[in-house]
Image 1 (cartoon, rainbow, N blue to C red):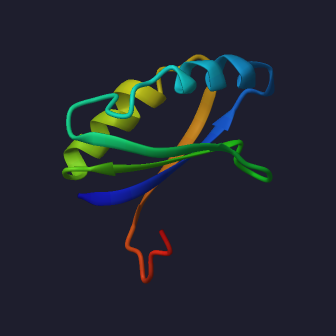
Image 2: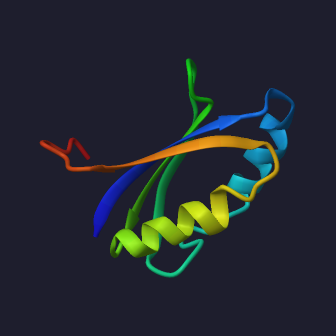
Image 3: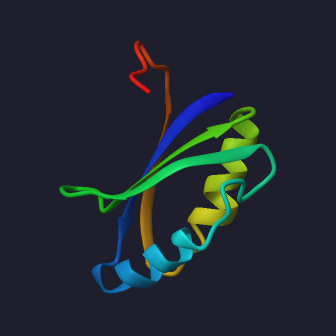
Length: 88
């Protein structure tokens, strides 16, 4: 499985509903995807989601069908992550 991080920019008035939606997801929210963590972050982006996907197509569908349609999502950027060392 390939690891990914998706950064999400939110409408500030929609932060809590977004958090509630993401918090309600099971660890496997869509076919071929396993969530590792969801975080509020500071700076140019508001939220980060770490996940693994069986392939790029499954990652694409997760972001475009599960994250992007949530009310308040203004922008996302998704990056594959190749670890150089894992500490856990």
